[in-house]
Image 1 (cartoon, one colour):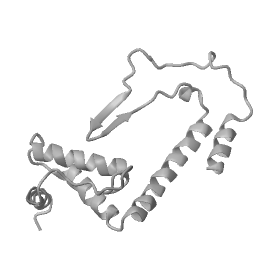
Image 2: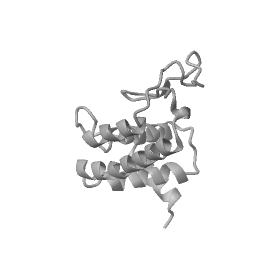
Image 3: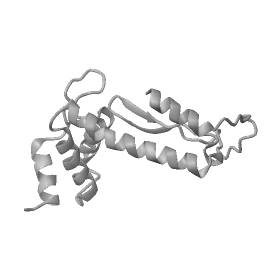
Length: 151
């Protein structure tokens, strides 16, 4: 955590900027904060004012920090449950490659389950640690797995 604070402090390079002088290309009146809502979760996003005024070096640092966070994510998933990475990879493969009916209630329930495990970093709820139970049948899951990989 302390390292992250130092990295962000290094981004400033000692320059003092007035918030009013930063070119802000974000229209806050039309900005959509709510991205998605499913189960008991609502995904929000926030505008980052001044991002476009950062130097290329600062943007590159942010890129590498985000890549490090993605790599660390797999470690966290693996520590939460030994099957989490396998379950995530299978579900993501189905999500990307399934060509069947994506308007059915079962598919929507599958999408909700996938979003829940993405949000919780695994198959256990991010607050209560209760196992997230899918709202689709085992038969449906078997059907979509076989439709993606008939072998």
